[in-house]
Length: 397
Ligand code: ASP
Ligand code: MG
View 1: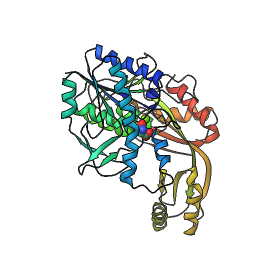
View 2: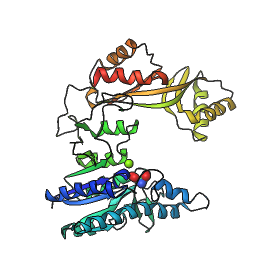
View 3: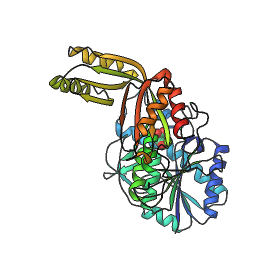
View 4: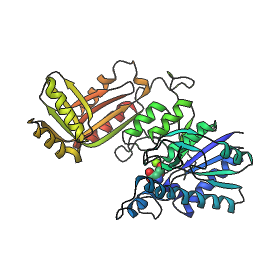
C-alpha cells in the first residue's frame, strides 16, 4: 500500500468552492494509486463560525477548564472533517472520517499544547486497506487516560507528519494558499521566488522567523523519519516546495553553491543594553524570567548584557529592571533580519557579504548572532525592507 498524507489548512476548506479544489487534489492522488489520508484544519479564517479562534471566543464569558476547552476546540476540526468526508462520498469516493483519538494519536496530558507520544494506526490502516479515503481531524489527540487534547496552534501540520511517519507514507503534502516556501516575504520583496527544494533545518528556521508556512514541530517529526514533505498550493497546480534532508544529513544533494536559501524578518523588537557585570547579570536574567518575559537575541559580555524583547513587553521589561535599580539603554523599533541557508555551514565569507550588502545601503548592524544555518542581524525597523531587499539581491536573486 502506497500511502500519501494530504493536509489542508483552514483557507483550503473554508467553503464549498474551496473544497472543490481539495476534492480535486484528493481524487488526483487516488488516481495515482495512493491510499490517501486527508488531515484537515478547522474551516476558514479568523471570524468564520467553526474556526479555532471563534470557539475560543465562546468561552470568554465562562470559566472552562483546560480539559473542557480542548473538548470544544476539537470540534472545529471535527466539523471540517465530517463535511469533507461527506463531500468525497457525494463524488462516489468511499470515505470515512476519524477524530484524532480514533486515528490513534496518543499524546501527553498537556491540554492546549499536547505533544504526540505515539500513534496507534491500526484502525486507520484497516480503513485504508478497505480502499477508503480516511479524513482525520487535525490538531487533536487523546491522552493515555482517555482525555481529548489539542496540539497547540497550528497543530494540524503535526498531525499530518505524525500520521505520515506512523503509516510509512511516501510523502506528506501540506496544502495552503501560497505556492510554497519563498526566498523572502513577497510583501517586502517583489522578486521573491518559490523555492523548489530546501532542507528540514532551513524550513524550520524560515517557519520560526515569520514565514509561517508550516509548524516547526511537524518538520521535526518528518525530519526524524526522513519523510519527504511538500508545501503546495491547494488552488494551483504549481510544483510547490519539497523539504528533504540536506547534503550533510544524507540522500539528496542540495545545490551546493547556495549559501543562503531565504531571507526572513521579525519586528518590532526593542533592544536593551544593560551595563552590569557578574552577579548583577544573573539577577537581571532571573528577575525577567520571574516576570515571564521571553528574551530573544541575547549577547552576554563581561561588562554588559544585550537582549531584545517584543515591543509589547518593553514597558514591563523596563519596569522589572528599574525595580532592581538598573538603568538600561533602550533602542525601540528594531527588526531582526535573518539569512537562512544550510549551505553556509563551514563556508567563509558569508558574514563579509552580509556586512558589505548592508553597508552599501547605509544600514548599520546593531547586533548579530549566528547558528550553523542562520545569520541574524538587528537593524532599525524603518530600514528593514531595504535590508531584506539588499540581502535578497545579494544571495537569492
Ligand atoms: N485549527 C488550529 C489552529 O487554528 C490548528 C491548525 O489549523 O493547524 O491553530
Ligand atoms: Mg497552519
